Amino acid sequence: MEAALPPTWQWLVQRPHPWRRQLWIKGRKLQASAVWLDAQANGLSAAEAAENWNLPLPAVEEALAYSEAHRALIEAEADEERQRLLAEGIAVGNAPA
Image (cartoon, rainbow, N blue to C red; front, side):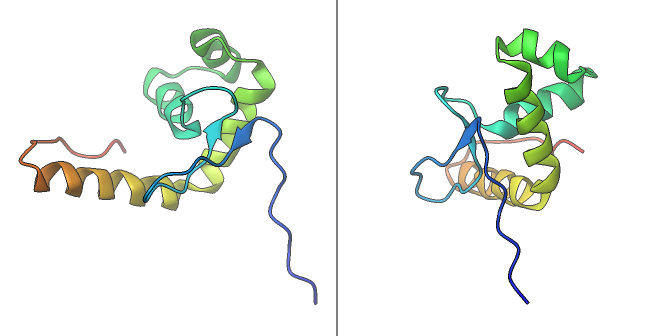
């Protein structure tokens, strides 16, 4: 049985980072999860998020699909960031639901 290949992303890319592994919007210093979290928090459709972030609709749709599929990674990285901030004495709130 062949292993399933990971999806090929047109609008998302990897970026070098010491501990983050999630993908970024190509050509922007913007994590895919930032678009996803903003859309969730503000009840935005993909089209509204595209307008809000000045991104092509297909880029937003891809960021939303990626973030949904990689929710565990995004949550783990948010926890890691919280722990790093706490270690530096910076108070932080709870993770978004």
